[in-house]
Image (tube, rainbow, N blue to C red; front, side, top):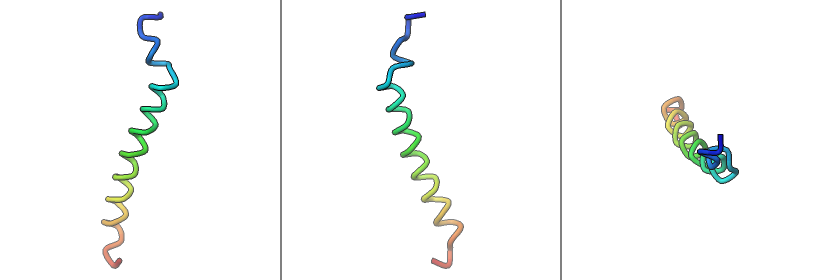
Length: 39
């Protein structure tokens, strides 16, 4: 079960959170622009 210990390491989790944050930022930014054409 120790073949891939990096999958459960803090660094891997942090990297995933950063990626999700960047993707979410772009997604929300794009949707926000499309939903508010007046501004």
